[in-house]
Image 1 (cartoon, rainbow, N blue to C red):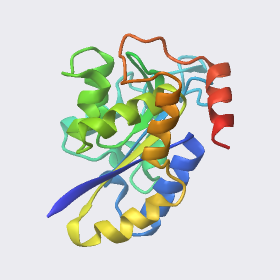
Image 2: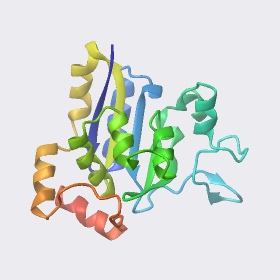
Image 3: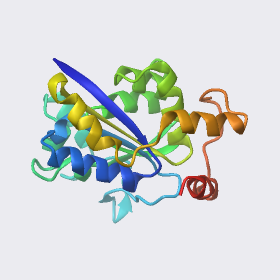
Image 4: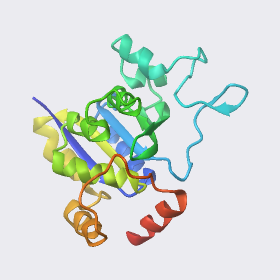
Length: 210
């Protein structure tokens, strides 16, 4: 039986470490997804169009999104990224309503693309709940993304779940503490109509949590 485990992180760097730890623990990169805020424009995309950043992975420079091509052929994101290059080689940019620009890779990308286009029911919340995250947690995850955070989700065997949860817990956000902090500032739930955080707001937010 396969289950999905997910965690929220304060930044891409911490989420990246979790992805690498999962891969080192034996999880195939095709079973891992990452979504990270790009509000501070740390990621410029893959070079394309005379050196300008593309807004999707296009490693073969055919003008088509490698992720969509991989999905259409039943291949994982790893195939689009070059097989052994790992999940993080397949990063691509998109904009999510209420969250702003994000960098994403993995099996959640197709659902996120629908959310970015306004075609997915529930937007980012719908994408997260489809990944197996409860609605209450998805509210916090979405808000965390809006504030500069990152989410990692992995499909794992039920028998391995406890061991792998311990792996990705190491630098993840403690949700009860984060909910409490958000509520003290007046937050109630994620609002897809809210303005995404600016780079300065993201930097200040991250400073709150070290």
